Length: 400
Image 1 (cartoon, helix red, strand yellow):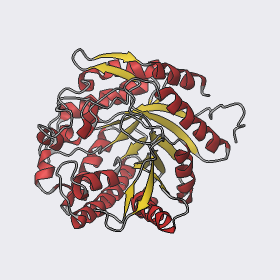
Image 2 (cartoon, rainbow, N blue to C red):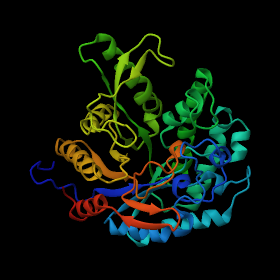
Image 3 (cartoon, one colour):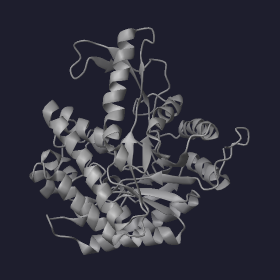
């Protein structure tokens, strides 16, 4: 157990950043690129994004500049299997080169296999509503495990609950459905897909460690004295945070926590989708996204998932902050919470800041800046921000 006064992290702690293929690689041909024109809030499309498909070595230089010993990135299914059952060996070879180069730089790859985007052929077959979806996804996972046997850490799905809700219940993301029953079918298929992916990867790489990157929100009552607000918070926690984990706990070697903000719930009987609505206190500190900054919520989330008795990684934690005025304190405050929890005996093995680069932030386009490095999207020039310099020092010293 660490001493709380030295602010040191464990010697084998993973320090990293995270990205996703669609947000940084550029040149995609998936369900998002087909859908984006006219739908993105800032009028953009993903386009070339950060051109990381061609500039990955340059990005790995940046990772080394941050003194990171790990990197979480995703593989683009639509590149690997552009047509059903037809594998793109050139794309597979490119990802193999990425993993090899990371290894040569002593950077541990954490590989995500699905980060919201799907091949167009898969979407045309009904996407994640299709009862065959888990099997189709499992086949792709098997292919990647066969071709990347040196990868130890695998994350089949990134934020499956976010995907299901935004794509099939709220209708904010493609395919923009608004159906409770379709959402439940998608959630069920995503659970089965994770279970099958776990089995397929373990069969090929028995020593692999396979987990989930789960968006976990610290739900709390807007009015602590209100029984109804407290009940709404407990319901949201059980239905959103715990449902997927409860159903996949026997197929998890670790739990990845994606934590950004809390959600203060106020009971409202006639709310459009639930019996509560989210409320942000007027005077609370907020990111450029309008998300409340609440580091204490990370500690509460860590406490809440210990019931699963799995090692923990913070697989995403970051802030939209174009002027870089809040990011250093954001990182410092969240790492202080993390250090305290490690000192208290919680098994937390790594931290991945979101994100390495400013990138395509889904429906928000390029308007939200999460990167430790800024990107000029006309020239693709990357520049480290002061917050990046701070994070590099923490990672180098392995302490706050």
